[in-house]
Length: 127
Image (cartoon, rainbow, N blue to C red; front, top):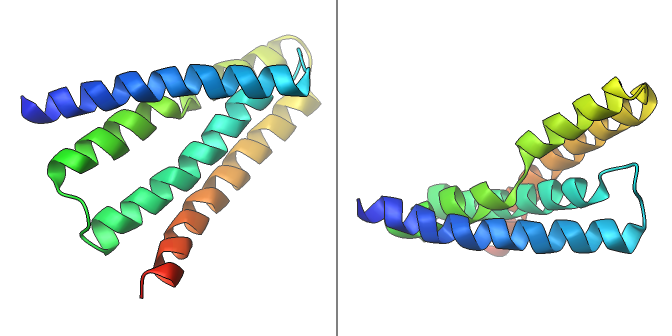
């Protein structure tokens, strides 16, 4: 039950951060057609989850409660992969197949690269 509370608190904070960061990026780009806000939170969230997982799994820095709060709750609510799927499908439905393909490629490639970068950064710094 205690872990669920940590996940819930982290999830609340992560969801609010997702709303703020995604909205800010979308507003900053001025785009109404391409989901830059979702792209930004997915890449940033992927980087952060890579950092945290390396600290948790590779270095044993966090205990189970901190992992539940940060990885599952905070970052899990911050990243918006389900929104990415919905927005990509909407692009396809509206006949914007090139934008859908670009969105798909950027989200997947940059997200995976960010997770790898986060883990590699911890490995380089934490020797």
